[in-house]
Length: 246
Ligand code: DC
Image (cartoon, rainbow, N blue to C red; front, side, top):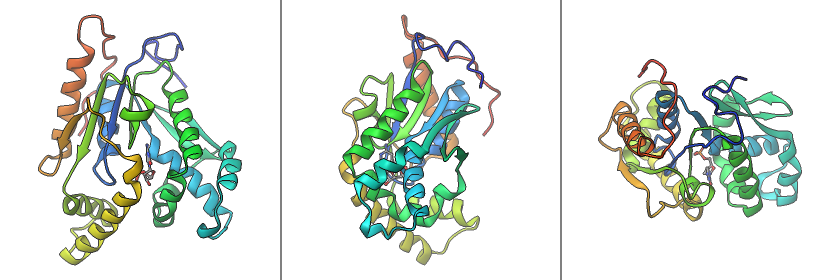
């Protein structure tokens, strides 16, 4: 892996941009594009909760019987490794991506995510990945718990109906009916309540309501905020900027 602009050196100052928000608020795709624009690494903390959940689901233990000991015993089989400008969870050394987005993982991941020791493990993986690198990291508690000193904290929100609609367009590839959106809205609101205890807006986060914004506009706003913060005198400047793609 090549770490350019000195970002691989542990001693290098690093910039953290933390993007938090509820399920389907567009955090990960926005974080991905913000990272691309700034030439930073993108870390999706939710993917680690999903990977541990996927590893446990592979063991075919009924979710009601899951224990913290089982999950912690599986943690060493899940590694978080750099792939280009992102970090990808691996299970037993094999990268996992599609499996993490499946409905089974989505349905059960909050069981793992509410366990404090699992959270400590995820937070440690994310901090290690960020060490010495400029990163855009997304999740629920990146600005509050994991990177309280982040250079920029953003909390994304959007109307549940709009979040549901976007999620379905992404998953189905066609425009969903109102009935489909209503059902997905119910599922999202339930997920919001399951995740509520670990999801918080930092008091110094910039709140962005994306209900009426395109993804390009969201990315543009965050990039502008990041530039304002990182170009302050004394701050480390942003690094290599790849050609813009939207
Ligand atoms: O963002 P996501 O849907 O991939 O998150 C998957 C699950 O992990 C969801 O239940 C919320 C939880 N999560 C969390 O509790 N803290 C984070 N930093 C990231 C995700």
